[in-house]
Every structure is written in structure tokens, then in C-alpha cells.
Image (cartoon, rainbow, N blue to C red):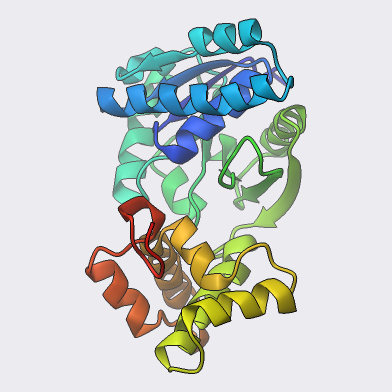
Length: 283
């Protein structure tokens, strides 16, 4: 099995930045790609902010932090990913966009390069068929904030090879992650449980059964959750929650996955949670 040494990350948003930092802090060479230069600058700032926290906690030295950040290649040229052993995609949740970029990379990268998608809901199989390496295609679903969250869902398709699975397991464990193996299905494991939980909390509020604060308090103190469903929805992004609910609803054709009308209204009105300054709470 080929050793993974250099990792390419597609997308310099919150998830991509966190994934890049986690790989870099573990000793991998990292190439972080985004089509927007501003996103790359923001990604560097995000990584520096996280690393400054680790420096203050004496987890890493200032010198090691500076070297790690300087060693990351920030690029808007897809061809700079040609020598990567693993590509992890964390771009917009639009199937055609993901397929298009992987199709381009399939021609750019080495035949042995493994392709992984961080999609939270889309079909890994449908993305993989844009390439000629469906045996080397897999899902690697990280969780936000990536450097702190220990879980990686490894989503295999019917064509993913055992060698590819083993490479991802070993790489994830080297990063200090806990792997759960998941066969491809809508929502995988976490989101299939978590997002309907958030949707149900929204439904309870929309029916006038309890206030926003009381719903969240009930779940925090009654179920020992660190966050209630509405607070958590704001953190994830209500647009992301709606997208995943729609995937679940379409995939299972089951009314229990139908997005609540209030969730749709919130997204249509631009109240997406923390990232827009207002969701169920104001920030």
C-alpha cells in the first residue's frame, strides 16, 4: 500500500481550513486549493487563530506553529495538486460542481491518488463516477471544528477497494481521529440522526409548544446534550440543515424526514444562524 505523504484539500472555507490544519499539524505536506484568493487569505487567518490557541496551551511551540503554516501551499491553481497522494474535497454541496472538479483532477493527478469527499449528504457513488478511479474513491466526513472533533465517518461505496479503505483508516488514526465505517446511505450515521433531531426541535417551536430557549434548555439538562437543537442548528447553518433534510426526504421517501416549513422560511429569509448573525438567536 502506497504511503500518504502529501494531501490536497479542495475548498478553503471553515471545513477545508480545519481539515488542512489537522493534516499539517500531524506532519503531512498540505496543498490547500480554492478558486478565490480572498478565501485562501481567510483560511490562513483561521489556521493561525487555531494554532495560537495551541501555542498558548503549550500543545505546540510558536516555532513549530509558524513552520507548519509556512509549509502549507495556498493555491488557486488546480494543477498544484498533481503530486498529492490524497485529495480531500470540501467545497460547495452541489453534485455537479463536485463532479466537475473531480473530473478535472482525475486527469491531473497520479493514477494512484486517492480521492475523498467530505460531503455531508450527497452520494459518494454519484460523485465518484465522474472519475476513472471509482475503486480509489471514498467519503471522509469530518466534523466542525475539525482540529477538535475526533470523529471521521468513512463512507465506502460498492466499488471502493479494501486498499483504499485501509489507507484512509491509517491516515485518520495518524491524525488522532476515531473512524466509524459506514456503507453508503443518505445522511450516513450522524446526520441521519442529528438533523431530524434539529428539525423536530424547530417543529416543536413552530407549533407553539415551547419557546426557543426552553426547547434548548430541555435537551441540555434533560438529555445531557452540550447544545439544544435550535442552538445547534444555528451553529451548523440552517441552510445546511435544510439541504440535508431534503436529501434524507428524497432518499428515503419518508414523511418523518420532511423539512419543517419554518426551517424553509428561515433559509429563504437569509436567517441561517451564526454565519449570518441571526438564526433562532441573534449573534
